[in-house]
Length: 90
Image (tube, rainbow, N blue to C red; front, side, top):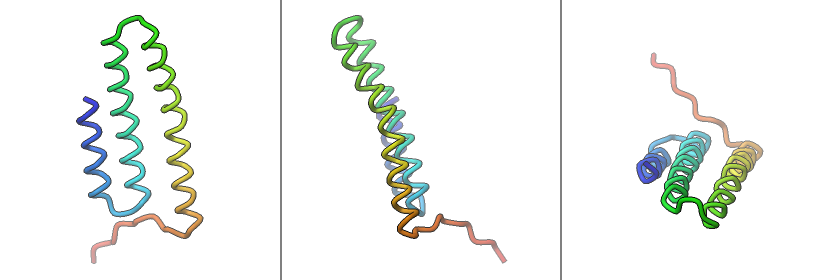
């Protein structure tokens, strides 16, 4: 599952037209893929000290990833990058 979401995020980065849609695709897929991989590691290790460390890493990533995405999007907005709009067909 995690590898699938990681590949899906890479495809989104290559296919989407502007920074905002690319950022949305990459951040959502990165969070989903890493969380699913870390949860699989937690289940694999069982109840051990390693599980606690993996849980701390998971919570840190859940908190820091949206903040980083927001900072990147805000920087692009302040730089003057406008969101992509679909052209009306005539």
